[in-house]
Length: 293
Image 1: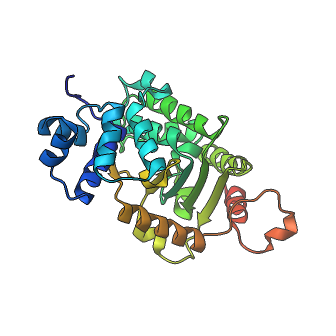
Image 2: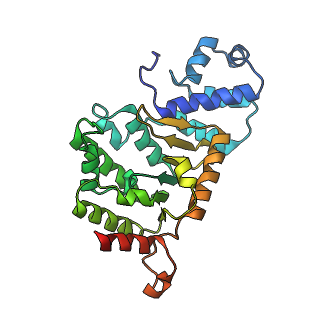
Image 3: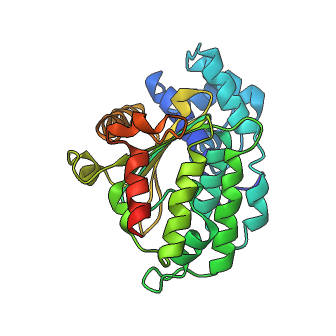
């Protein structure tokens, strides 16, 4: 079997997990490959995500490494057997590998926790707001309409039969950013209120008056699949995405998000009676901004 020319984040992650298991077992690549009857080079390619591994070989490796966590092993098997094909496959020629990896991460997540300091999260953006971002000359996006279509298709994850829970902490600064005119901003703010009606969506606004955690954290998203050990934190930057997968990093970002949520205003809750909003909350802030537009 030939080596892959493009390695998805899922394929890279499977290799990373197997390498970690081997190192935790105190085995060299040569020792591990000898025990299950494969070449050292083949195991190295598997650990780098360059080639696939048969299911039975994967189970053999886990046994050799002393991994008795059955749910985790089964999650690795599912990761190995996944085709990687989904709705995003139709965009393969026009979207970057990072964009495709993001769509696959979202499709497998049971929980998404995201913090945005300057933008409304992509899963919540209206078509006109997204187009205004992609059309910004200083951001220099290519193929604007394809980018907008892809972003809108990503949002289907919010409404399919078994959607993930999505919890977003959005800095107040993002609500003031003018991507498009006042009408675009108004529609986007109303969209946040509409999405907050979904039982699996939680939206909090982090106000300027709160402590400085948000200023120190930057933008990130934490995707948790059914097996929490295989969670991923995504950091987006101008030069490309960075994926954090080590358990220490996942724990750090879990704690960071908890601090952000604790310091943010109470979530948007349109079910409350008007008098219940006497204390400052996310809905009251958005309604104030709508009034000022």
